[in-house]
View 1 (cartoon, rainbow, N blue to C red):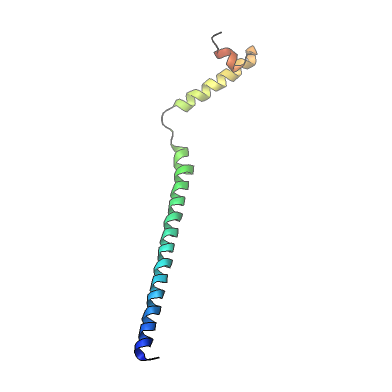
View 2 (tube, rainbow, N blue to C red; view 1 turned 90 degrees about the horizontal axis):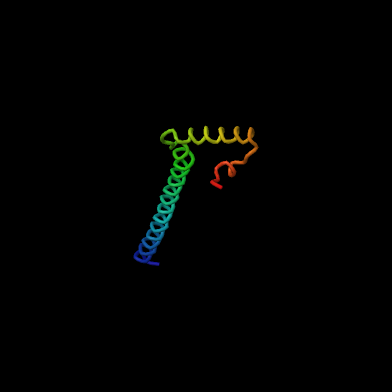
Length: 86
């Protein structure tokens, strides 16, 4: 092989290595972004959504449910029987 052929072969090898390096870098970036996205989604779903309660409406529901269950024990009525109009 002549020098020119060797240099051309080396340049071709370098181009292939550079292209492979770019693929690996792109894969690592995508993997990092996907991991960050999954972590953000998990934090949002399991922490932020659980804490997000506004007003006192859940307290009213709890009190009403407790009152209904204690009155049904006294009267022997079920929840559906008490709330029906018939």
